[in-house]
Length: 345
Ligand SMILES: NC(=O)c1ccc[n+]([C@@H]2O[C@H](COP(=O)([O-])OP(=O)(O)OC[C@H]3O[C@@H](n4cnc5c(N)ncnc54)[C@H](O)[C@@H]3O)[C@@H](O)[C@H]2O)c1
Image (cartoon, rainbow, N blue to C red; front, side, top):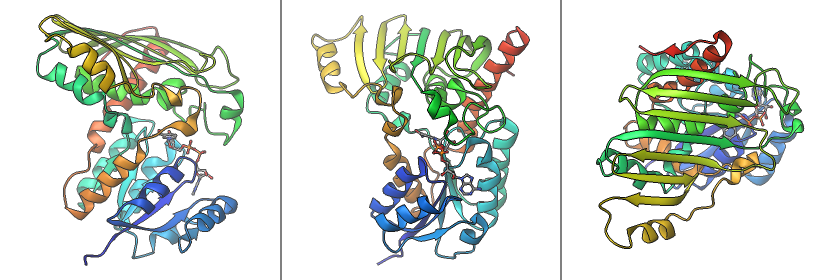
């Protein structure tokens, strides 16, 4: 029997979802967890007997049984910890956003190339069931030329959510607010579905929280293809509403709420196609809109990372792909700050 891939996780907030996925993965063994809070370590050790616990990341990296480390720390810590792990010979799976600046994120890519190790990034919403038919309808030309995309992430987060942990809603550690933290998932989907961005024009504001960054953004985005999108993000939409992904082309229209397709109209569609698609992709909608613990879908990405190491192939989302959404988010902030349209190369 071949050796199982040794898995470790640093940061035990959303990191608990990585722990669970690694513990359940058939080709991996959960070896260790690291956090600076002892009670969080004790809880995992109780739930997963035999798991080693570390208060010091450097100490954990000395363990030769660890092959992959999931980096689940506050966003601005991702690059430093991922690079450190790769320099210690470990593959890394990094939570979204890859880091809060393009420059920091590039350090992960440089370390990946330098060490020859694998670096993957979590953007699990790409694996929502409805993304497959939506992307296919665009890529195959079924929808015609894409004209317009309408993206809205109308979520709700309490003040307590921002106060808890102290890093959320700060420029230094979160890199932004509703857009960099919550809606970055949908920014990733937008660019994955609609292609390379040409320019971004935005307004942002703080309306419902005592935070330093933003809890509302509105942007007009132009793509190199000529298509245009509007993108709204907020954590003020009580009690947590939808994640709208709406795409309109010259031959048809698609409207979805997160993993749920709500409208599927195509000029040349066979009779009954829309009803079939709507019943097949009925999804759960925007569960995470009101409760951050309801973010799901980590298992598929953790398993993909384990398989990439086992079979020596690339993980699903490489750093250069994840950097695209960080570039767009920072362009939104720059446009709002300067009052000017930001143009991409
Ligand atoms: N993919 C998703 O759906 C999803 C969901 C939530 C969060 N996230 C991302 O995951 C990351 C973490 O977010 P969170 O909500 O879990 O935050 P969190 O504050 O709940 O958890 C972070 C953990 O890191 C620990 N930590 C801080 N400094 C440390 C250090 N030096 N060494 C070891 N542990 C340390 C903290 O004690 C805490 O337990 C963020 O980048 C966030 O954007 C992704």
